[in-house]
Every structure is written in structure tokens, then in C-alpha cells.
Length: 227
Image (cartoon, rainbow, N blue to C red; front, top):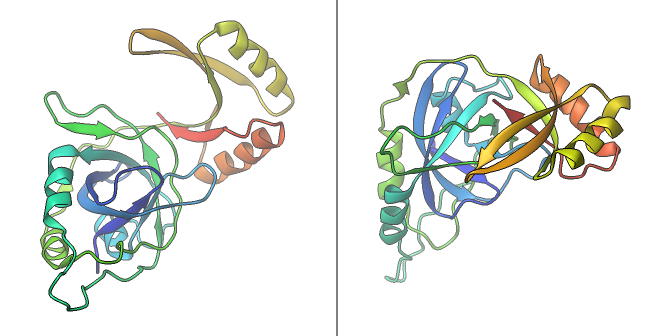
């Protein structure tokens, strides 16, 4: 019944808000494990987390991931090893739930860090050994599920990102045998970035197949993104 998740790079332990962009459900989870180790995926959910988000048994869903910095620092100070000689209680690995992750900016004034847009996969979720998790688990398990407005999103395969348009154009031309690639410009810290993307795709399954085809051309850093 642990409300937990696994992420490839976020600090452990940390607290994050996960929002299901398909039904608007939003919960707070504890990031306590590494994963998923599947190309094009970013997050694993425990069974209870998947239930609360309304996606148990569905396999995948598009979500937004926001790290809650203040809560994460408080959690790091709260979870201390048990020095009494008693064996600490450790959250057991949970059956997996899969999600598709999207990045959106945090609300104005929010102290949140938003993950890089990618898709998510599935895998077991467990707590790091030696950490007492009782209080945190009870608090998260008792939370109320919030509901937020749902907006339409699109799924793409991003083959690469460049600071020069001509480099992006060359990659788009090389991918012509796989599909029609488009170049989308974004601004990162005031500097232009040119993203080579294919899509939008109808669903995650189509995106996975196209991702495999793009990776087969040598673009090992290609990934699925949601906008």
C-alpha cells in the first residue's frame, strides 16, 4: 500500500507531485528507488500510487512530474536510520504501474522543479534499506486525491536537440526513411534550441514502435516526449 515511485535521476528520498493528465487526478508520492530501465520511459509507480491516479491495469498514462523541493528537504531530515538496534521497517517492493510523463511549468511562485519531458515505464518500487518510513507512509497513504483540469497533449519521438538549425536539418533529412521529421524551436535560458521530432503519434504503442525505428538509425539518445 506504499504511495511510492521510482525515477532514474531524482534525489532519493524526495517528494514529487504526480498528475495524471488523462483524468486530472493528482497525488504526492515518495521517490525511493531507481528506474525504470526501459528506453523512452521516466517513472515507475507502486500499485497504490497507480490506484490513486486511476490507472491501475491500464499500463501507461501521460503524467506531469513536479519535484517538491521544500518537502523533499524536510523528508531527507526526517528519515533517519534506526539506531536502537531494532530492524528498521522497510517498504517492500510493490507490483508495478506504468506512466507516460509530461513536463509543464509549475504554477507561478511554486517552489517546484519539473522533470524533463519523457515517457515513463514500469518496475518494482522499494525503499532504500536502513530508513524508517512509517510516519511518511502513513501521511502519504491518508492523502486526498486532488483533481485538476485536463488539457489535450501530443506524443512525439524526439530524435535529437541542437543549438544550430543546420545540424537539426541534417538529422531530419537522414530520418526521411523512417518518417517525416519536423524541427521545433524552443528557447532554453534565452538561447534557441532546435528539436527534431516525429509525430504526433496516436498512442504510446505507436510511439514505442517509431522510437525503435529511430534508435535503429543510430540515434541512441532518441526518446518519446509529450507536449
